[in-house]
Length: 630
Image 1: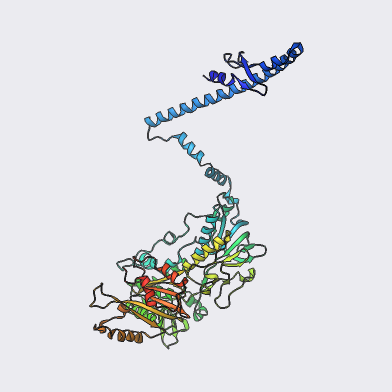
Image 2 (image 1 turned 180 degrees about the horizontal axis):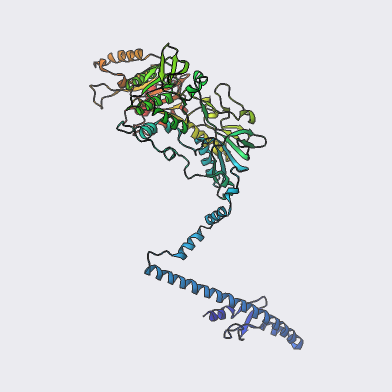
């Protein structure tokens, strides 16, 4: 069959002088098919005499040899294609028959073809198999993108860079021995619901602390740092348990605590913050320090859990949202052992730096009801170790003895690299001073807790919350990859105190600002369908005075007996507006987290702040949030 096909292919050709006519001659390969013996009819007519015939004969003879060789090559190529098609057809027939006879058997040829289609992955794996990783340095000498800090800000920056440059190579250096994790879970839902307590209020078995799947945020996204330079597809290399000691901005290098040096093209500083210690406890004797936990990271959680097992009493220093959350968590932890929990702070009430006075005191009263011994307007004056316990002398003259002390008095931004990098620090707020694009110097950015940034709407700020770290890390990552975006998206933070309250906040939530609150009121005699909104304008009013003003205002418009109204009914659900120069700059959503019908309340709050609501009736603005929705 292949000879017939060759005959068709070689029967005629076009040349520059005319049509090539073919006469038969024996094929040198098979002896059956024909090869070309060329006669140019147009040339025979044109040339005459012996000279022309001789000349033509010579030319024809040489061309005949060339055509013979060309035809031979064509015949061999056609024969090869024909045999290959027969082999492929035979393999397909054999494969179909094999699959019918043995449907459960493995198809070796099919597997081989699949692996061939994944040639790029196979090549990468082959390269890695050929490398003796024991001989490769743990620290790469050069990376295009360097992220200093192992938290969520660095993780979000990597995601943004990867979005812009799919094959980007990014190295993250963190001083913790873990990949990035959700730090908020350490003091919020995980402690109570998973780590220490269950829904029946009984102590749980301690979860294996080596398994961090419950808070891991970068699972499957990273590789060993030393493999990063060999990855054709780029990716995230994580160098754990290493600290950057110095940053040379001019030469674009960093030096690690093991002496290694890394060159980079662009760098993000996301070093977060370090927990503050109480002044008295920081200079106390070693026995006191050994019984003190500065709560900040995953290791602190594990140490505290082990310590509390042997305790009958514990003191929490700090009245912010972290100290308040931990106080309730520890109370639930020791419910079966009657653990005594003290909470000590200098403010008038819990979270007094965020909430107006009446709400702060309202939460303090609820904390006391559930069992926490809250000691307000008190400072620690002395601490010493006596009879196996820590003796704490307070500024109110009292002395309490506890088995353990937990410090939650805030953090200070980690700016250790400022001197070596010659970066500017903010005198008022602390942290690396960056512009609205989060840039500190050329090719150097900062994000998260350690960055003092310029907010075009609210002015220069520094924020210490996870959502802010995620937003600024993402923004810095995009800008590192070539964009020039300014900070415009207001981050949020939230606090959850089981059995007491929960809230979300956007913008500036500073209790020193003027506030205007709108709460949903419900009386015992009312149905759920009969509710009204009671607005209240407050400026550091006491709880008692605030309630009196509400009651008097309502009595003039209602025949209902307000003597049955409780504190919980007044302040269970509502909105708190924070104003500066009569303009809304912050909003707190009070106990509205579980209301699903208005799931976009945070974005509504952001829009209210961005639009510059000023000198308006905030009772009407509050209707945007529908605090009666369930």
